Image (cartoon, rainbow, N blue to C red; front, top):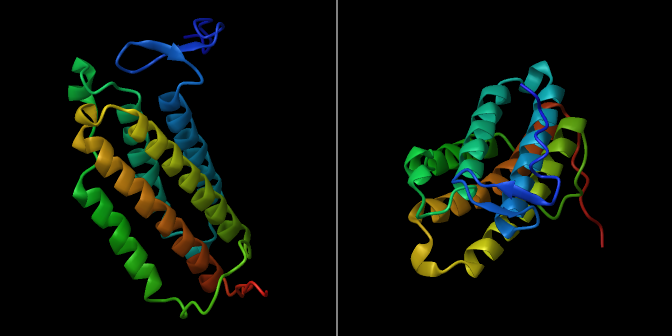
Length: 189
């Protein structure tokens, strides 16, 4: 199978639900950022050391969930394809919250703003966090522009998941630095 088709050579692409749209469409921009986030998570996983390797399965589950959200964003709500798209549930959100709480229990109290960085895994987690925030902003922009009576609950749960995911990456960055004994650098005014 060839990787290139030529169908996008004029700046159009197909949604999962079949419609052809501009590659600059807000929907495409949103799940394009999710793809970037997913790649950053892959870089984070590649850099995990034995001291923090337990994060691998958790991060791979998050990658899987991001693919599901991307498919959701690539599907118009009134399309029959919507029936085949995996949904983000409250259980997925709880998974993130439980992971945040678990890591948070091991961390020292945060006493100010920290500078992104430290160990390379923490730096990757901070990049994932900021990319996740950008993705969230684009999702909000897309949802705000959509007719509110056509926005399914699954989109709202996906937005909540993405919001919680950025918090997760902040805690992962702190956790990586803590477990690898790299001190956090506080912002000095």
